[in-house]
Amino acid sequence: MSAKELDRLNVMQQLDEKRMTQKEAARILGVGVRHIKRMLKAYRKQGAAGLVSKHRGRESNNRLSESTRQQAVNLLKTRYRGFGPTLAHEKLVERNHLCLSDESVRKIMIEEGLWKPRKVKIVAVHQLRERRACFGELVQIDGSPHDWFEGRDDPCVLLVFIDDATGRLGRLLFVDSESFFSYSQAAEGYFRQHGKPLAFYSDKHGIFRVNQPSVGKTDALTQFGRAMRELDIQIICANSPQAKGRVERVIQTLQDRLPKEMRLRGISSREAGNAYLPEFIQDFNARFGEEPRSAVDAHRPLTAKDDLATILTWQEARTVSKNLTVQFEKVVYQIQTERPSYALRNASLTVCVNAQQQVTLLYKGKSLPYEIYHQQAKQSAVAMAKDVDAALKERTYAKPAPDHPWRKYPLFPSQKKFRNVPAPRGGDISTLENG
Figure 1 (cartoon, rainbow, N blue to C red):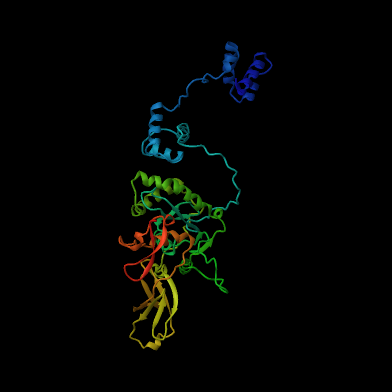
Figure 2: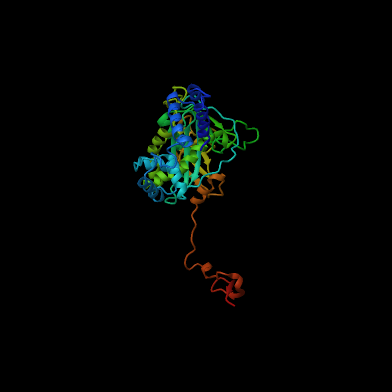
């Protein structure tokens, strides 16, 4: 008998011996007087066995049918292999119309060896930051390099924009790497869909913050910081990954769900993935989004002064020489103008470069015509740690010709010996030959 049934037995014994009233017994056991009468009748008829639950040893009325369980096992081992219990339950219910709970799916996966229960870890306690009140008041942004297409395409980076107040995704974009132009492309799509938020919350990547300012310059801005200042958007950098935990946690969810969703839909390229992302965002927000505390939308609409085509370009200031030339990135640009040359001598202008590497020379907000006068050879470039992979992809290696002299050398020089032999032309060279 269970502890609850033993308590009932003690009360029934006192009640049968007239040492307790039925109302007192009902109050002690937390049941009604009518139920006390039924239990007393069963006790007098069967003794202690009459108080034991009749359901003990019997199958539950809500037990999962064997056919449903077998159908779920077949799908979990084939179509939904590698899925977690929660995501697998969603697909079994939505796509296959099976009637079962998420805990039933978890139990089945553990029994079949498809899921290993995780041990409870000691979680470090961090101070909880309350969500912002208004939609668009703070947008957390970050990038996640990952094998998003599970080998069907090259690994790439997913840029994530998530609203702090609602937890809803505002923008997703597959790009080559985290760079100024990739973040500008993602931000432009966000602005045109939602408007300008009050602030962006990011990490201390060199795109958002000057980590090593020059001597005497404490207010230096990155190119992205300069663009956001022109759009009146504040950039706030977090001191730790835990500080921007919402975007970090949603990236973990995306790394689990998004590749599997694209696998089910047969998406195997970055272009097809970007085309599918709006549909995924809508479904994700319907599942995990929350309502903000305030109904006020803090986004501001784009105005005529917000020329995104110019603002979201790489901009650097240059001074015009006496012969009306400007040097930028080892290229000399000769300005073509009909006005007197002295009008532009020593003038300050802005060199703008867009994502397509098109150069524009702006002087007092107007574009100046130019011709390329001289272009120097490229030297070693400086790349940040997160951009090394993208920089290596841009390099092309030339293979030696089939008749190149290097191909005539042996593969294992350590097993050969050197001997001076005359070359066919051009003097003597040191070659390797079998001993």
